[in-house]
Image (cartoon, rainbow, N blue to C red; front, top):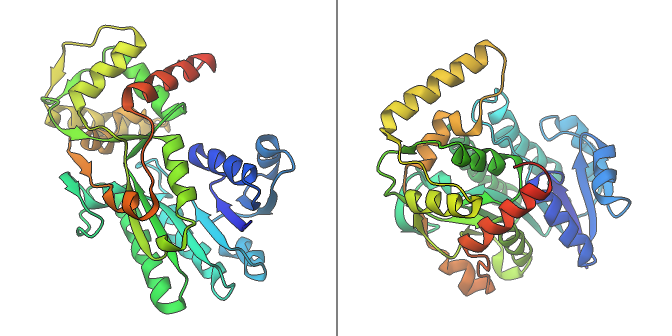
Length: 323
């Protein structure tokens, strides 16, 4: 079994990854600002290093340890957050610097297919960067830093680029609530994209422990591709509501979202996920990727079809009282 270090362990994907690593018998250490939160989630099944990816001094104890694998999942997803670049870019660099000279077997990074921008697809891993939002730019820059650390310090890496990850979390609960309340269709709704269920992403993160995955980038996406309008209709079906017949132009939606974001900043309130200009842009563009490389190398296949995943997500959120 391996010695594994994880950042972002208390996040949506991180919690499930740590549970699986412990279940598989690995020796897991997590980085956390709040150790009590870790104990609440994982009892005494993991070791804890108290620290923050944005504070390199808090990561000094990592340098004196040996880990076979480091999973870097800590990220700022909120496009409007002032610390987005500090967390996603500087944080990645800080963790890598702490691992220099420790003999780590692999640095595994959870990135986004958004680094490629709009992809009518199917987009391959070797296509050039073309990020369109602050978050996507930060993930692209983090990927560049990771490859630089391989060239300069020989820290082997694997990068998983996921499409939009869904499942029972607050972000997706907000999206489903918007669908329930008749959120208008933006544009024609004919753009196509994959989603990917959270458990499939965790399967991929575990699969890349294979030596075959060294210094490779893999796209991870759900098994089916639907249009935005078809996806919206499927959400409404499993929510048990009638889909809205209202639609607004993309330009008007972006203007409204930009105005809402400015007002949120003025009144020091957090913008809704569905009312961010970046969310509108992601929702209304094509994002289709080729996952044949990870299938060929590692035998990974997305197991959860969108209709099954949406039904599971809605049931879980209702059980938690989040929907």
